[in-house]
Amino acid sequence: PTLRMRASSSRSYTDGRLVFSSVTFRLYGPDAQETVVEAPSASSAHLPESDPPPQTPAAAGREAAPDDDGFGSWLLEGGVTVRGGGGFTLVTPQLEYHETLGEARTRDLVSFSRGTTRGTSLGMSYEVGAQVVRLRSDVRAEMPMGSMGLATVRATSAVHDLKGRTLDMREYRTMTERGETLSGVQLVATFRETGGIERLVGDEGFSLETQHAVQTNAPSSPLARLLALEGSRTIQGRRLAVEFSESSEPLSIAISGEALLTAAGVDPATTPSSIAAR
Image (tube, rainbow, N blue to C red; front, top):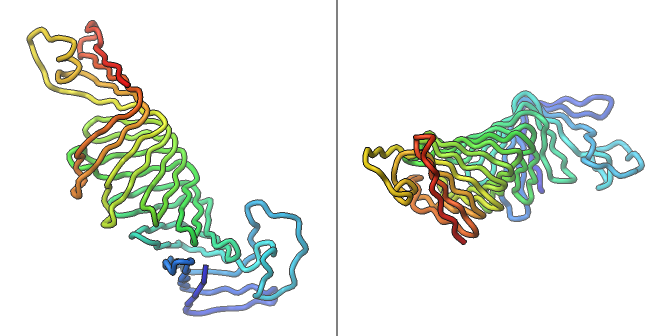
């Protein structure tokens, strides 16, 4: 990626370091997509690569050979803000930017947002050319889902494809204000260009738990207990897809692959009813 930098002041040191104040980086990938990075302070640094191969130290100078050990890299500090495509914004205390790799990363806590979705993660890497953000661990996100209320998601890790407008969360658990709980291996949220949620897909196996509050005093059949009356519902299956309207209201829920629907009443003595389907 191409880097253009602007700063309010600069200092140079005898060891070759450059330090800038009130700095703005503008990074441009192959498709000219702009990423803006702002920080109170930035300094040139010898930052190690993820898995540095054996190599010979380079001579001093700003122009670095591609195999230099992190030469041509920057350390941004004091509260860093990153703005990418689709309204994506990320904030973190400090950030390393490796010019040779075209990658920004941090081990610190990061806060991110896109449209109405907000979240945090411990550690992050951002591939500027590919426009891919990898949220490393302990990912937490909140997204409004219309009448379902605010959905809270926790995941072990996530990948946000800015160009594809997807957030791929792994080993997740989602809870809504209305009481639904969705958990599983993979949950992919697709964003609209305007920032709202367009689709949620739970893949590689899921479990959906809900609570129904429709009461009755009359004896009920197993089918009635399953579909309408008060008590809990658990759906376990292979794949679940939820489509949302532009106002974030769920429009449809589709389940594919083998699935099992189980219902239990509020009375512990009530025998659960179930339907298995393929």
